[in-house]
Amino acid sequence: MIAALGNSGHEVQALEPTCLYTVLKALHEAPPDLLVLDLVMPGCPGQTIIRACREDMHLRQLRILLLTAHGDRQLAQFIQSMGNIHYLAKPVSPATLQQCVDLLLDQTTETDLGWSMACNGVVAVVDDSQMSRTFHSACLRKGGFRCVQVEPTELLATVLAIEAIHPDLLVVDFLMPSFRGDALIRAIRGRESLSSVPVLVITASRSDDVINQLLPIGDVRVAFKPISPDDLVTHVKSLIGEDAPPPPAREVTAGAAEDPGAQ
Image (tube, rainbow, N blue to C red):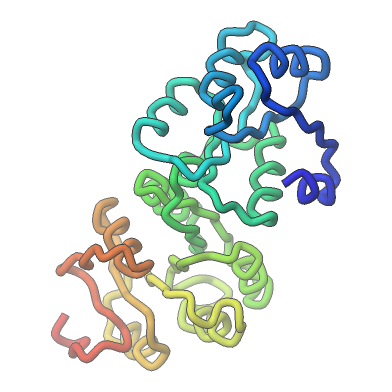
């Protein structure tokens, strides 16, 4: 962990948590911009350090990144009650750790609870409407997903932006100014890193032409605007593989055996 952060340009100070006094003394002598700590430690548990920081007027606003394999609902409630704490479940890849630290050090970054607390997956949201991107992202964050909004510009630039996110699922509009959703899906299918990413197309167009364009691609589900928050979360969970059945209404699975004209 130290090597990963050091290699990304951060100045890292290692602390051995032998006791609470030692940790607090070190934090006072060299106040960090971010404290990264484990939860289960023999000499001084992570929750003890967090409580002590929040009761200390000099460390009350310190941003904290908690890394642990022991996350549960009780821990989530504790994190929310302490404030300004982010949580990543172990194992954490060096790339994810670096990205999270960079975001937390950016003082303009808001806490993303879908990422900070037991993230169920990363979703790239592509729509030319900022309102739709914001709405879909807000719904999915409440469902435990980390959402990254992508404004569609030129096709290749959009594909590269999606590829940089490494999403577990793509939520995309169909009719966009520079290209259509089916063109984007075909483009990402040609990228090795994105070839197997499931796609949820959310569109206001209910014409058979939309379904006919998407059927040959495969592994694409279509839902229609307006979509309820619960239906959106259920669709995404189903596609990512959390065993949630998809909503029965207003949904067509491209590549399945159903007759699209019957929907």
